[in-house]
Length: 242
Image (cartoon, rainbow, N blue to C red; front, side, top):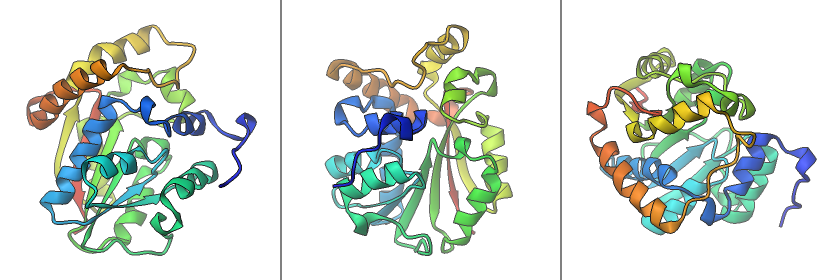
């Protein structure tokens, strides 16, 4: 096992992600996005999910319980988080820096792109590693007017509109198949965070099992009907390498 990093050695984002290693900290809004990735993988006949900017590895945990037939691979630049991922999933699951993304794979970047200053360049570099037709699922926080101390503390450079995410992906050379808002039902929480910021902005709320089940049921429905929503707290896009 790798040595645990001291609190002084990790950023606020890394601390948040290390806290999320505990399955009890996982929430329905995580599950909904993970379910979208799994659905895309099955639709395209992929057998492997490459989690770019994997963070805590929550997607790997979710796939293990809901889609054990899908192989999980992770990519993570943070040394502290990569070490934790290695401990949990094994070094063989790490996606190497020179590996190509082949046709049996699907990739995802979930709450990653907003942390990258040059988002177009980073996406272009991944597109160059993908075989033609490989899909990328991207989820980002929505609505620049909602940018708050929460975003600052987590190292966000921006929040996105549907138009901005589509333009970013197209500028990186992807063909965007769809781009939609997620979680319209959570808009009041974003407004509250913007107007009344918490002192513990990076802490993920602890929800009861009942609240998670109810939230998952509601958000699963709004995710399936996401084409109709004019706004939401996240934007999710599915794009392919041409």
